[in-house]
Length: 120
Length: 109
Image (cartoon, rainbow over all chains, first blue to last red; front, side, top):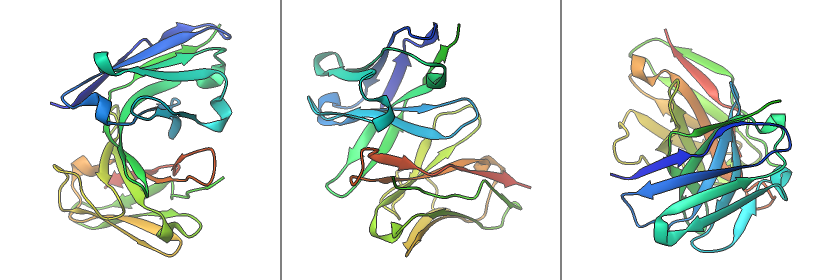
């Protein structure tokens, strides 16, 4: 079945780095835009970044320069490199598939998330 | 940046109808998507492009938009519908391409 499985979260000190991974299965990964969304403890959803099928990266304005999204279509994988981590980056990070059209886009498949905790 | 406003909470008795609103400037001209997030679980898309239900979503879930308000309606509410619900639009006018509402906690009494 269609599935997304995130990994790579953990506890990191402020200023540190982490690389999140998302393994996709059950669909043709290279056909879809993919995204990262995060949710701080007890808070709402916040879009982080998305990437088109093989290039063109987009980021939430507040995160530009610190996070980098990438993908490996041959390995059906999405990544998020996070540098200069701050306490406010503490959140559950979800990988999601994008249902895209010319007029709009939604997240139609979500993983279970990987937790990132930034603390000294 | 574009702001979507949802009521923090809505309560409804089992078997009744729940309406969850999402306010935004001229939101009727955008496509609105809705997600359900049960406690401890990942979000699930329940309505997309205003009115369409993904496969597996019960017909009890429906969406509509008019003017500055989008509405998610859940008919014949069940205990299992208790969850947080988020509206979302795709705003290409600003850097924040995806905008989520703050979420509404639906409580089934």
